[in-house]
Length: 369
Image (cartoon, rainbow, N blue to C red; front, top):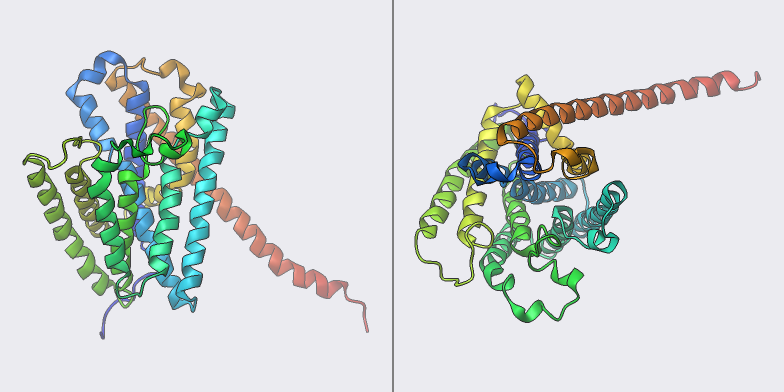
């Protein structure tokens, strides 16, 4: 359409929302690790944990969304759907492998039972396997039905979660395998059900968003529809939660499909709000940088919060003290991310300079004819 503004290749508002997810993730971890028993019974503590609890679904949802966007970009660069899907699958295996490296790091820094730590299931395990599953679903289907297949798969995961996590069928399985199917305190912080559902539904919306390649105006129309759709999904989930559950074993805050869809709705609306906010302000740009470095922040902060470095703070602070510590930690993490970014840019610039110098050296070193 004439007059439409070309869309930038990178959607910075996704990084912005991921940066906000970083902040709420750190809030959840510091509140959980540092708050004393007396304050853990307060309404303010429950609110902090509730807000922080949106971090993990956001990371998985946005990872699914960006995987579909990356797949679509690969197709436009001339890759076959098989090649693009295989690349995403390999990336999923890398993340899954990094999850074990992360657990090994935790054991090296803070000690503990080696086997127990190595087999504990965390969000990186779920994300890695979700990327592999999402890549297979994305590759094996026609482009016209990819989004539908991913969305239906995510919905099915959410609907069967109360049955899967309470089933006795998994008991004969080895513990390290069973931990992927249902949460076990201390051994499986996350499980595939319902968490991989956030990734799959994020992938479905990524397929939809990937169709807006022509202009910012086209993308704005789609993202605006995410706002209203997200509100409708969240409201529908809330209304459904007011009725008696059809699952005798469902727990609202963990395995309930209604809470699952409330969070999906919040994330969709949040994506639309991030688009409206833009990334022109200093705060938004800083949050976007945090978003692009979310894996780095996750990697370094967990041991800072739960491990030996903060051992004296564990369950020893009032909520107000813990929140003050949270602010200090976030400022420190932001400084580290910005320092890392400056160092990376300096290295890249150094390599560019060397590439310009090398041909000159080669010319000067040639013997005169």
